[in-house]
Length: 191
Image (spheres, rainbow, N blue to C red):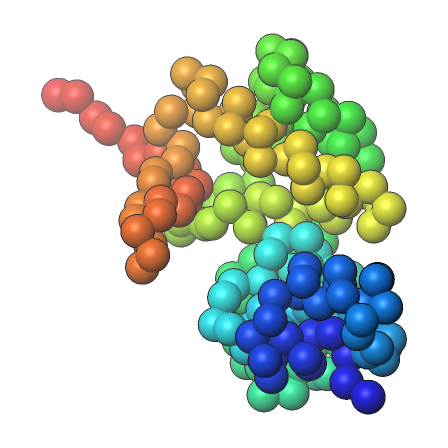
């Protein structure tokens, strides 16, 4: 019997709808051995990028990437873009900093701002996931879902800070939405 993600890939019915059908008893599907890996595989099959929270899961469990089969190369490419996220993991207090920065507390926004500035490499532009994965790795998986809801707002508050204005750019993507890329600002010399 196939699992929900396999049914989704075969029929195109949304995961949310399939979960509702299963919960109400109208659908019987097998239980996923690893639901996170099935979700990642389904995401890659659709041609989408892996979410930051799922990339953090793959960083913590690097052997599972081989279970993605034909999507191995796509996932490996996205993991390589991250560099070595385990080397830049902040201490566990970053979770409370993110929570307070999302609420707009100035001291927490400045603390998160200085951490993000320290993480961004000087030689290239990096996407949002580069910063987010490192933040997710700071604490255990039990708090990631909470952090996933707070991190975008916290980073948006950091981007609104005047000291961070030159540290990011917005670029349009193929779907007409803007993607944020972070970089170390170039030095300008006035003569």
